[in-house]
Picture 1 (tube, rainbow over the protein chains, first blue to last red):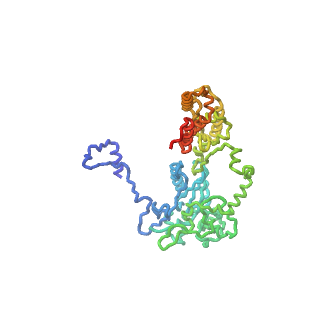
Picture 2: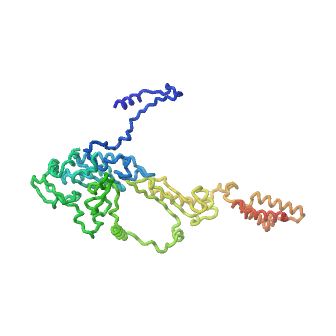
Picture 3: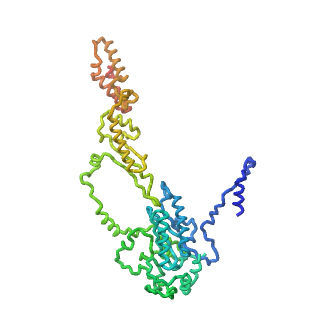
Amino acid sequence: MAAPVAARALRAVPWSRSCVPAALGARRDLHATPACLKTRAARVRVGKGDKPVTYEKAHAPHYIAHRKGWLSLHTGNLAGEAGAAERTVEDVFLRKFLYGTFPGCLANEVVLKRRANLLVVCLVLVQSLAPSKLYFLIGYAETLLSHFYKCPVRLEVQTVPTKVIYKYL
Amino acid sequence: MASVSRPLLAGGGYWAVLSRCGGRGAAYSSVPAVSSRGGKQREASTRRTSRTSQFIKSHAPPRTERMAVDQDWSSVYPTAAAFKPASVPLPIRMGYPVKRGVPLPKEGNLELIKIPNFLHLTPPAIKKHCAALKDFCTEWPSALDSDEKCEKHFPIEIETVDYVSAGTSIRNPKARVVTLRVKLSHLNLDDHAKKKLIKLVGERYCKDTDTLTVTTDRCPLRRQNYDYGIHLLTVLYHESWKTEMWESEKTEEDMEEYIWENSCSQKSALDTLLLIKASENVSNVTKEELLSSEVVKSYRNSVVALKNEGETENNMSQYKESVKKLLNIQALP
């Protein structure tokens, strides 16, 4: 925690690297960005064997396109197409919104599919709410999101009795 | 999340968990999206309105158990939809299995939901689409059965591109580009008009195919670009027929092809012949007589061919013969 704070403080002070004798090959470069931690991203660390994980969480990011599919499908990342950043920002908002709208009900990640301007949100929910409440929340989410994004939004919901466990780590 | 503790409880504690989640005792209608574990544990849904019903939650069995083998599949999946395990009567498993295990079943399988499926496009469904669309289709006109006839009746070709993408907006600014193609042989142009038109359009004319290609994208809408393209074509046509005053100042550098009349080649050839005739003491021969003589004509043709078509074997040998005849030189061994 201290390192980024110190880095930010140092950035404010003009730092000259010319005082370092470059002829000797010694360089004192300043890394002002936070560390990436690529080897720890999206990985559930192995524990005692009592931690249940879903298929999605059990596989690390390098298994995408080998054992995992993509959670969000749109044309923004194709060559010559625009709007990749906008779709990504929308995806982030949608996941946060749905995580809050269905508290404690999401059994797995949200799958987003875009077909022309229709947005299809596929949810897998645990049967923790009464169906009437669930229907209300689905309608609420659909209406609010379509008014917000000015495009038709459809929620396709699937319910399971419990979370589908892949393995215990 | 509170749901973490739930999977650890065995079947007996399941009902207690459900009650803790606060299922109010309202009347439950059979939920179509519910997928239960096999459906053997739950009987058909019962309607209870008393408060004790919050401990008993009944779920209807999945729809797959009531599907006939010869049902109409296009009514189960009429449009593109995500994979619904309770609606697809196939025992599909998907996923990388754990060691000494099998892939995950279809209930709650996110991998099956992620992938696009074509369950709505079975051959009978496509046949129904075609039958529905047939009412809106008209036959191709039988008189236009070859490319030449199409070109003869519709000489101007308009090319536009539509773009489909996924996003909140269906608009794409690249879709406003309109390309207009027309062969100059279909336009009513005389020699001067054709040369002037080619000079006016510059690079947009292709000599090999005799096609004028005009691409417009300066207007924001496709219709506006199309109108502008047609307007350009009209203006070009009418302007090329007009002859401006300054066109008479066309010099030899502006000419598209070599014209032998009034060129220095003609002058030098005539001067040479006159000198030859004078040295032979022949009576006055007029320029017109010389011009209309065979040797001069063949010389003219060979020079024009050389300048316009470039140097080929044929052209060079023709030039050699015509010069020999003009200057009356015998063939060298």
